Length: 412
Image (cartoon, rainbow, N blue to C red; front, side, top):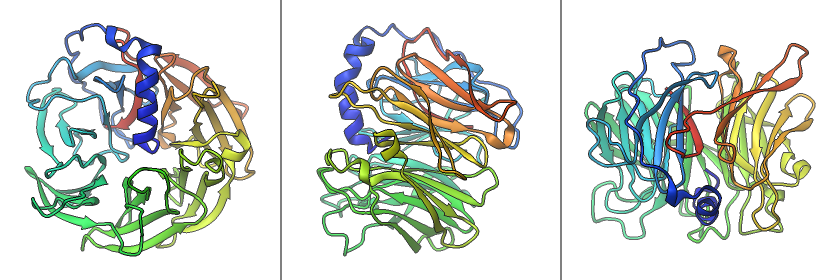
C-alpha cells in the first residue's frame, strides 16, 4: 500500500531481520474453502499474509474469527492454479459481486486470480501485463459481466502489444476473463507526473479512481486527484483535484453512503514536506462529482504521514494507520478521527515502523474495525463500546503454522 513501491522497498530491507523470513517453515496443507451464508456485507474477510517474498491467503469472519487459515499460498498450490502467487498480493477495495475471492498479484507478476471460496478451487487466472510489469493495483466489477483493473505503471515503449499503454484502466470481460479495452488516464498537461491509478469505488454510473500522480522516480508528485469514469462509455467524465495533498491512496464510503473519505500520504522522498501534504479529505457524495466538505490535519497532529488505510467505525468515526520511521525508530500508530469534532486519538502504537498495515470495517453489519499487525502477527480489533468510547477488543491470531504476518485485507 503506501506509495507501494517505496514502502515495500523499505520493508524488504527490514523484514528479514525482524521476522527471519528465510526460516519460514514449509506451508502445511491448505485448509480448504468455507461455507458461510452471504449477508449484507458479504461472507467475510480475505486476509493476505506476506513477508513480500511469499504469500498465504486466509479467510475470516467480519469479527476476525478464522474460517480457513490457508485457502491458497505460494508454497501449496490450489487446484487450477497455474501461475503461483508472488509475495506482492492484495485483494480488491470493493467486494466482487461475482462472489469470487479475487487476488491481485501486483509486481512483477501482474496476474489476477479468481478463487471459489467454497471449494478453494481456482476458476481462472489472467495476466494483465501486456508485455511489461504493469503492477495492477485494484480490481472493480462494474456489472454486465465486466470489470476494471487499475494499472499503476506506464509502459515506456508502448505499441508492441494490444492494450499495452499502462497508466490506465483495463476493461475486462469476465466470461471467460479477457481484456477487451482500455481507458487511458494520462493527460498531456501533466508534465513529469504519471497517472499511477490506484484504488477504485463504484459511485452511481461511474467508477471513482484515485490517481497518485508520481513521476518516474517517485521523487515528486502532482496534487491528489480522483476521476469519474463512465461505466457506459469507458471514458473519464469528471475530475476532482485535491490541491496541496499528494499520494492519495485510500478511500472509503461511509455506512450511510453519503460521505467519502480519502487519505493522502504525501511524498516519501520529500522528508521535510511530507507531513504537510498528508491528510484526510471528506467529500459529499450526494452530488456528482463529489464536492469537498472538509480537510483534517491528522498527519500534523500525529507528527507522522498517514498510510493509505482507513475505515469507517461508524458514520462519525474513522480508524486509520499512520506510518512510523525506520531511521528515527518510531513505530506506527492506529488512530481514530471524529469527523464531527475533528478530534484525533491514538488508539495504539507499535514498536516498529511499517508493521501496521490495512484497515477493514463492516460498520453496517455491526462488526469491529480490523487492523493487520505484522509485528504481533495478529488481527487487531476496535469497536464502539457501551459508553460510546472506542475500545480495543481481544486480537485474533489468524495463522500460527505458516509464520507469515498479515498485511492486507479484502472482503468476499
